[in-house]
Structures are given as structure tokens and as C-alpha cells.
Image (cartoon, each protein chain N blue to C red):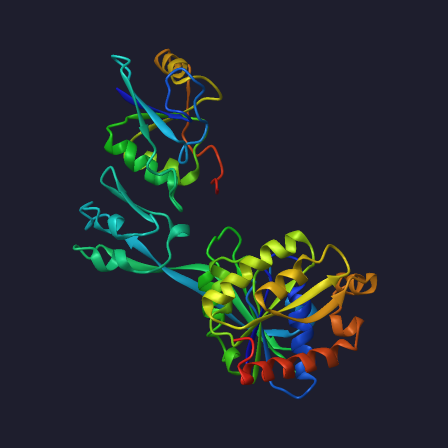
Length: 119
Length: 289
């Protein structure tokens, strides 16, 4: 399974980014092999609608689940339409969050968790 | 003549000046309309007290997608500059608050699967004041981010712009709603306060007037506080300082009680009438242009 974790600096062992639509990088991980790569978030500088654009990018990359701090309403609606499962975490590195995901301790959300964020 | 009041910084006294100006001119027997374009926080009506008896909704047309005829080709999402329509997982999603109502998605859809439905952004209200000022303002609905369509419709509404003298109360800032408010004005009065913050935003607002090619002058409000930065700047770039309104407790108290500047300081009626003549002369002689 391919999952995406929001990241500030694109590294696997530093603190993740709690922002979704406007994080700097997504760490894209294959949960079977633990192989990962860092992709710059193309929606970072979007004038509006960063959440939906980030989801479009992740959907195109074959991502099936996402982990971040919280999801705005537009991001969540788009994830739902794309059939991507949405998980939240408060803290951790992508490596730790991958382990938490694999052990089933991460919280899966069924609605938006944050108000729309404007920059 | 159309005279717009702008500032850059918020809370400098745009509405104080706009309402006093409109009142002073209507007492001189001009036909005057006052258009409050600060649709995110309109408050000129408090000082003018018009009887609001005309109302009209402001809508933009947003796409509505017929899921049965949509093939998920994605052309609508590609053409949308504002990412208000997204095709994902075979579904087409519309985000109404991002839609500017341009209609491109409807035009490019090869299946004619998109129809347009009205989405309300706000409302226009208008009426006459007791003094005979024709008044109109727009109110943006809570949660709606787009002020421009409301301002644009307000400026075409009820022949408000056809009066002999039109006073436009602009929103603060220097972004799209300000540009939309100022567009078409013959002259712009920039109201500022003599502080570094006032000056910082005045510079931006002045640049907007230059891009628009509209002559401008400055009114310094709360004169006596701050520093001499605004005076130095106006001398540097060659903008006239048209008037100085001192910082006075009496004025502040009156405004806070909903009294117009002319009610608190009747001598300003004469000052604003003179200001109008001064602007007219400057424009006809080509000064300030």
C-alpha cells in the first residue's frame, strides 16, 4: 500500500508537518517494503484550493492513505471522492508514523478536522 | 465628478471623510450619491442614516455537474484558473467559494454536462438620506471570500453613479476590492494618519492610484500624532495635502456615538465645499495629473 505523510523538510527521520495542503513535501512510502521518496508539494504556492490540488497530486501518485495533522473541508471532500483514507497524528517523524500506521494505532478521520486555513 | 476615498491602512477615517464630504456637498444643492464599497464592513449608513428601501441579491453563476452525462474527462478542471472544479476518482467536485463565475467550465464541457446555478455572495441595499443623498452599499455574506463581484454590481446599481457628484467609500488595503472600487473615479482622496504605519500603507495605496492613472491628494487625519513622515513623503512624490483634521477628543467621541464629522464640527461643511472646488480646479487645469 502507498501512503503519503506531510513533511516540512522532506526527511524520513525529522518531525512531520501537521499542515496538509500547504506542507513543503510529501513523503511517499510503500508500506510493504518501507521504501520511501520525498516529493515537493506542487500545491504549496497555490493561490487558493491548495487542499484539493494536493489531493489530485497524491491521487496521481497512486497514494491510498494520507497522514497529516488535520484536514480542511475541501481537502477532506476531495480525499473522500478519490477514495483515499485520511489519518491524523499529533506528532512524530514519518518513520514513527509509518510504524504507528502499520500497528493500527493511528486515528482515521471520517470528516474534516480543521477549519479552512488561509495564508 | 466621481471622487473615491481610499487609505491603505484601515481605521484612518475614510468613512468620516466620505460621509462629511457627501453631506457638505448635498447641503450646497449638488445632487450627490454616496456609494459604500467597503462590503466586508460597510458603516457609512450609520452616519448618513438613509432609509434603506431597495434590496437586491448579488449572485455568481457556479457550475452544477450532471453526474450521469459527465465522463470525467477533466477539461473543466484544466480550464479553471481558480481550482474551483476538480475531477478525481471519476467524480467532478465543485468548490463554490473558489468559483469566480467565469463560465469557462460550462463552455469547454464536450458533453454539455455542466449547467450554471446562482450562488449568493451578498446583498445590495439602497435608499435616500433625509438630506437627499442617494445612498447604496453592499454587504458580503459571512464566509464568502470574494468582495469584487458585490462591489462591481453595486457600482452599476440603481444609477448611483449617474449623480452630479459621486462619493465612493473604498475598502482599506490595496488589493482587488480597492482597485474595483477606485476604477472609473476622476479623483482619489487618500486619508491617512501621520504615523509610520499610516505612511507604509499610504505608499501602497498611492501606487494603486498611479497604476490606475487617477490623480490623488491626501487628507491627514488625527493630525498632531506620530511623526512628519507623511509630510516628507508627500513633498517627495508631489501629492497635495488637501486637509488636516486634528486629533481631538471631541471628534473621536462624536464618531463613536454615530455622529458625522459635520455634526461635531460644523465648520467642516465649508472646508469640504471648498475642497470640492479645489479638486475641480486642479483637474481642469491639469495640475496633479
